[in-house]
Image (cartoon, rainbow, N blue to C red; front, side):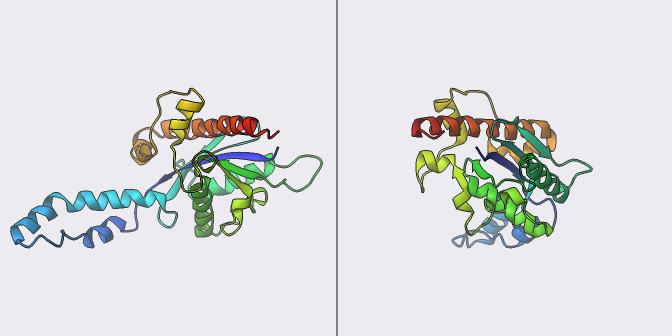
Length: 229
């Protein structure tokens, strides 16, 4: 096997003037004509709409950032690397890239073996990592160079969401884990990551690692049905 089970958690931008820029461009509905109604909307609605828009930037690698990366090669234990006071996003990516290449190297070959990236909605994770690597001027790890290629990487990716729901389908990993893996453990939702990271980053790390293990178990169960060894 040459699989790497993979998951990232992301955060919206914490600076860069994004809130102010979005707030300045957030205007009342066009049908609001009275100044009193417009002023009331600005006072009560504009900041909340702008904050929600900034939160959504966590889904865009142009603006958002990675707070932790969980991964496991084949049947190895799940590992996770997170942001700390001494590890920024660039250092996190460098460390993870180096660790994955090291784990993918054995005594029979001086170069890391190419890995197939497996995840739930893995195209999001792969593109986000690619975008952040570009942002920081980093080379992709040798073992994932093909899988993280935004042009042809889909050939080296396995998406458990698409395997289950089809190319245009959607299903949450936690729903599949409950129904297919009998995993009804309490967990946070992806939309809660940013707020949770502020107060309890270890819970986000635990969530990321749990999702890696869920993906691996789901992939193995699907492979069993497909007769894939």
